[in-house]
Amino acid sequence: MQQWLAEIAYDTTSGTKRVTESFYLPTIADVRREISKKGAYALSIRQYSRSPMERLLARSTWWQVQLLRGIQFRSTAASPGVALWKMINAETNPRRQNILAPAREALSQGLGVMDALKSLNVFEHSTLAILAASEKANKLSEGIPYAIESITQKRRNASKVKGMMAWLGFDVFSILQGMFWGKDVVLGYFKKNAPKDPEKLEEFTRVVGNLELTWNALIIFAVFMAGFMIWCILSFWYNRGKADFPTARIVRKIPLIGGYFRDIGFADTMSAAARMIRGHVGIGDTFRQAAEATNVPEINQYWKDCFEDLQRGVNMGIAMDREPLTRAERLELATLSDLSQVATIMESVAEMRIQASKTKYTLIFWLGMGGTALYLLIAFGSAIFALTVMNMSMDSMVSDMMGTNI
Image (cartoon, helix red, strand yellow):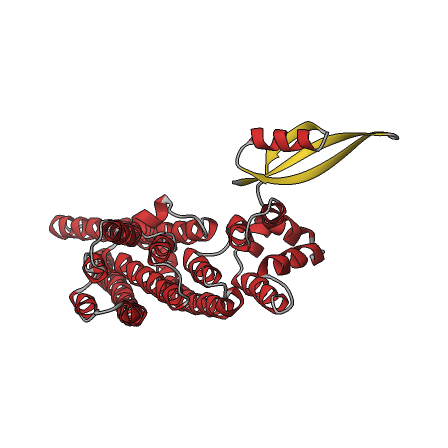
């Protein structure tokens, strides 16, 4: 399903009328078919793409929270689908109207509120999982506060990561700027004032060459890391809401960071599954929805494998006792004796994963600090080492001057 903008023409008693309408359908052929049903003619059809400002607004957690709160407040007097429909019709901002257009089309075609929210392509999988769990239990308005809490918590976590990256990046950028602009000046000065003594000149040339190589390596490494970090940030922001994309696969291969994302994904899916079970949602639907609640392939496959084992008649505790669960989490599952304990155990596993993610975040922070300190140590150490080269050059100049005076 995707959004299309079509310029269509109607035959009226006063002549041909041209209008532009939005459609949310799978293919362009479906759009032409829908236009024909209206008795109109398609002049042009193009796939709609959001402007940069619309993408920025849609990715804003503040706007997402406001949208969910609006649905929650209006759900007291109407169903969530009707509440969302009223919100869309009451919107007057053109940018927000364009963002909400896919949801309008989804609701107008008779789809549910969850289909409409998914069509917006702005919410993360964990948020949609919480909303879907509540919707399946017919308690969507009660699940919205949990979804808002999840959004705000992720925003706080993201703020911590951004703050850490900004602080470390500023330190590296400051020393990098000094090295980048001062390298040619310092090395140029050294080369102009090389010693005249052949033995000292050989040592001087070797030291200056090693110093230049070290500074070039530090500059290239810092530029590469800065480019990689900026690319990751922009890619994650641009692809928010997508199931998987190349940048996410690359980041997940980084040992500690990949483990952090897996812990967060497990915590989100386990919490959503527990909420669905407490809402008396079927086990099969719970596992299928949990598999769709994450973009981490290992976690998605875990829930799919559990569902397949359940279909073969395997006991739930045995079906869930598999990789990538840890030994402690498997011990929790070993205490499962009846279905009434499933939600409690899932919540316990989610809490364990949250604690594990906090531990990994702390390790990432201190490793980042240590790496930056090591980088600065090498940079400053090489600069101090450069002073010895300067002393060799100054000694040569003084000797030349003394020799000249004599």
